[in-house]
Length: 219
Length: 226
Image 1 (cartoon, rainbow over the protein chains, first blue to last red):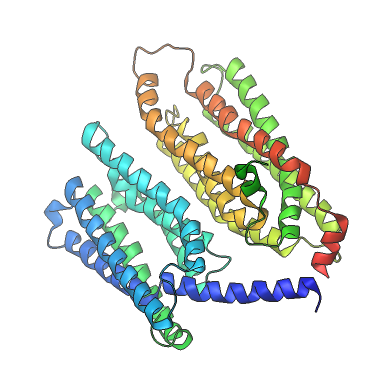
Image 2 (cartoon, each protein chain N blue to C red; image 1 turned 90 degrees about the vertical axis):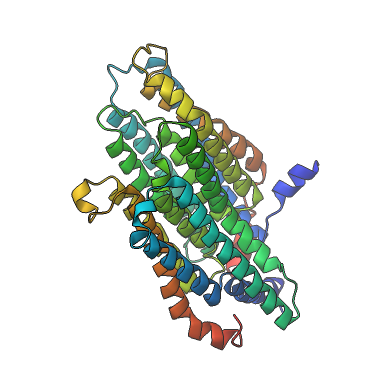
């Protein structure tokens, strides 16, 4: 066998292994937990807790809680799957995925801290309300950065987040008659519920059967 | 060779011929982009005057430079592709362009939003270079898997510098927009200076770093395609 052919075979095998790993890293059950919790919190702030929707402290607290729940669930699912496979918890493929996701996620984290500081200490108190649109854009870019080893479904999810985030940024600066009667704080919760809630639920619904077939039911 | 240089020289996960091929495209493009950014940015910052310049002229200037660099990049891609059998760009070059594209879309849309928000006096104009550098950096990191660690390192530089610049920009903006301010750097001149500072030296340093190994061996290209 030619050396190049052997290299190409190894590359394909590695690519397939990485696809399996990234599928585990951002799996259908994680998307379900994240999507359900984001939808629930978003809808609560649009209905029951409407009066508190404009409070920045509650905004940061509520969505940090959703992130924490999703993060813990994701860690648990990945760990369970690693035990089932007899694999390491942090595999080389997962490291690759984390490296691809890191730049945009770190940028989002930095923007969040900056917005929190500006909201607390300076006159720009509503700047945090644009964060959901920015998170959506950066989350989408992060998912798209994994495109060369991720399945098609994840790429599509990335594009959905990116385009929706950009549209939401534009929506934020449109005149009030385009805001469907929502105030600033409610708009940010609505963006969160629609993007991180609904998109993840749709992703979970679309990928669940494939995840079961490809990963033996534990993806 | 120092450990840092050795790390930068590694081709990463992809085949070394593909990395070398993409660096052969990237090195001259980075040199041209860096030189243009530095010269145009410094000249406009020195000559620019807030009464004579317009924010749209700033945008037009840098979009023209961006298009020129794109044209040069596509010319380089075609040149390198001609050396391959079939005359098409390498799959990794195509994947790199695909990986970069979403970041370009985001930067384009947010630039329009920025100009709409800060119209008519474009008080948010200095944010534009930082946004461009941020999304450009994210794009470079995304394509780093196809063109070696040096490209990814350049991407991280852009992200780190642009993100950290957001810390001091609000302070600067509050000074620049205060009613009594008549200092030497109105918003448009500052924006040109930011463009020169962000896109000039980093590109030149990158081009200098990767140039010696930028030209792939002829045999490697043909072998990689066969």
